[in-house]
Amino acid sequence: MAKKYVIQGQKILKGEIEINGAKNAALPAICATLLAPGEHKLKRVPRVRDVFCMLKIMKHLGAEVIFENSTLKIDTSKINKYTVPYELASQIRASVLFLGALVGITKEAEVPQPGGCSIGKRPIDLHIKGLELLGSEITLVHGNLIVKNSGLRGCEIVLDFPSVTATENLMMAAALAEGETIIRNCAKEPEVFFLGEMLKKMGVKIKGHGTDTIVIKGKKKLHPVEIEVIPDRIEAGTYMVISALFEENEVVLKNFCVEYLETPILKLKEIGAEFEKVGKKSFIVKKKPPLKNTKIVTAPYPGFPTDLQPIFAVLLTQANGVSIITENLFENRFLYVYELNRMGAKIDVENRTAVITGPTKLVGSPVKATDLRAGAALVIAGLLAENTTTVYEVELIERGYESIVEKLKKVGAEIEVVEGGIEDS
Ligand code: UD1
Image (cartoon, rainbow, N blue to C red; front, top):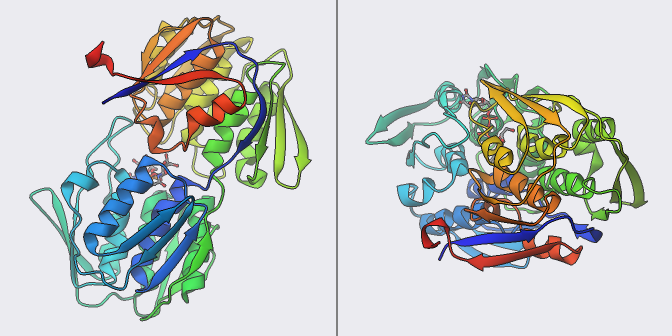
């Protein structure tokens, strides 16, 4: 049965919110356990739909999985299949990460080519080019990528764009390749750094992860690891904005890493918020009116993250003047705008630019999530708006936010999960 969130807006939020482990760090880490047969233990793994979907694929391949609370035990010693089923892969874009993990452990693997998704085309040419340079042969047969190799060899790869999952795929493949691989112009995201640390723990000689050049000396045999997933910077950024919605709000964000969020934090301060450290890894974010308009340009890390632009767009509807958001990564990431406008926002979109005129009063209405972050943005709009907002297609939000409803309720939000989708009403 489909679900919806029903939100009574304009409630003051006070209390603590614990930040989970990062979805985008957990997903490649789960794949990387394939590189070393044996029992791995991943701690602080978020209980979100994308993780559960990835684990279904792991079980299909032959892994034994125990997921209790946030600790994930994966035994990869009995992997006996190297084909990722379309029914599961089609639910999660990150299934493309199985390419890099499987190519090193078998001579032939099959992974469905991911299609486009609502935020854009999302090609994988960089993944394929890099894996071919490492010595694999890739052909597309009936929508599936057949990856063959007779031994991977280290090489030099220059990425045309610092793609996150392409960098991660190539790191995993290079970890088992013979000799040295140098990946230039690679992604510098904290999640890429984390994967590098995990590979290092597994026995790979790796340096430069977290910079634009990674050097990897492959090793034939790696060993299983125990590692804790880094905090989710996008989840933390989302709750920061929620805390900054009303002057009386006082939300303490617990257990996250401010260094991962330097650019969005600077932006939030520029718009009108104060940060106060209230513990070793805890912060309080407070609105400091009047909110000022700004310009946001999304870019690879350490630039402004594309995943946070819909979240900031909601706050900017409350800022004085005209704000401009330029989306440089995904061509279709403004679909949430039409729903926000139905709530009273004034946003014009042309190609990759959204022009937000503020401040505008938001009034509750039924709205539909179009993707994960768009969905979170609509929940924020519901918290801000007068009256009742009903958010449909919330399964998309649960792909990446663990217990979002419980967390918000705990700090005083009036939000309920109600059974029924648009088709049922
Ligand atoms: C990852 C994140 C996603 C985040 C995105 C950008 C995971 C599981 N997902 O996605 O949540 O929104 O980074 O921070 O970590 N590109 C190509 N060819 C390729 C690969 C990418 O042209 O082969 C382009 C894309 O179309 C896009 C840009 O590169 O314009 C960046 O995308 P990329 O970094 O690859 O995003 P993902 O790794 O898919």
